[in-house]
Length: 150
Image 1: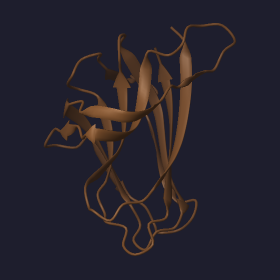
Image 2 (image 1 turned 180 degrees about the vertical axis):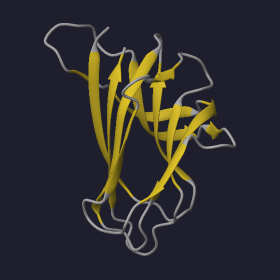
Image 3 (image 1 turned 135 degrees about the vertical axis):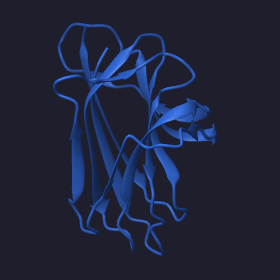
């Protein structure tokens, strides 16, 4: 097993309950150990970060490949989707949710230190991060980082 990390920065959104990121296992099972979400540039309204499983993956149009932490290991078989031509669909019950203060640097770090959150290489069950709040006139920017074992 190898450890990978990935980070992303995106503009906020003006539609509540917008999918921001999707962590997707492509060919091998992945294990999410830590997920950090924060405000990089304050929007008009602070975000509410909501974590869901997917019912469908959608069709991604922009993807980041997590980087290997060690010096030896294969390229990650897990990706971070950042935009879609067809958006994923969500399960009805979120795994976690957290509203952060509307200030630069505010955020949340979710950990699964004793039993990582499993991500199966299937069309369902991927991990999706949603911004539950519309950000208003000033979109701001939001950050994500993830620590993943594959």
